[in-house]
Image 1 (cartoon, rainbow, N blue to C red):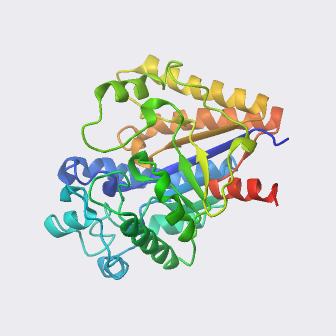
Image 2 (cartoon, rainbow, N blue to C red):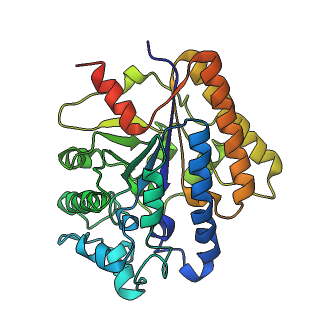
Length: 331
């Protein structure tokens, strides 16, 4: 039987994660803080020997506009709402010429930093923050987007093997395209009804409220699981369910902040004791408003992992490493 396993996956997006709803002029300090805190995260992960999957928007792999434009696919998403397209944003709002001028839409230097840190897996969050459940787009367009993501990774001499669907718009019909483009693992959503996300538009307040409450109270189902429960289907990537979103620090919610971290610690300890998987995720930009306090919370979480490793033999694996372990045990 496998020991307990901690998986951490991060949705690395910067402004591409919400260009259609976040005016850049309102969030420049937020993303600049994000860029500063990422090296601190990497250092902390290395200190604790924690392996992390960095699901990165493909456009961020580039350091200048020329390189990015060379990798744009000929087949682009035809969303019914054009403002959801990153290409529409580039056309109407524009982006800078390089990372120095525009650190919000280019991050080649940070991608290099991730590559240079032991145990970190570069993965995909699609090329253009592609929405798989929005009206108008097609699976062929999605496949072209993934091809562009792989081309962008090739700029850094690597191939992407794990993928996270933007906005958690998990689409089972698109899994075959993922596999055909070289992906062996994708992050699945928790099995609770409030994590079934069909669109970025018009999602019910009730569903969002339940997702928020579940960070502090046991609203949803048990979110740890045996490694052996991850199903293997020929021609498809492994779907590795998420367990918990590490929500942002909020200064007016000191008690809730403590509850949130304590809940993660307790869930991780239970997974370690019961030899189950615990899959934690967040966006690096979630640390953008209160980086010092957010890093303190992460330190507490990783200190708990260190105890779980010492007492129960808990291991830390990236999504790609998890897929390799599962597949190796069934050869």
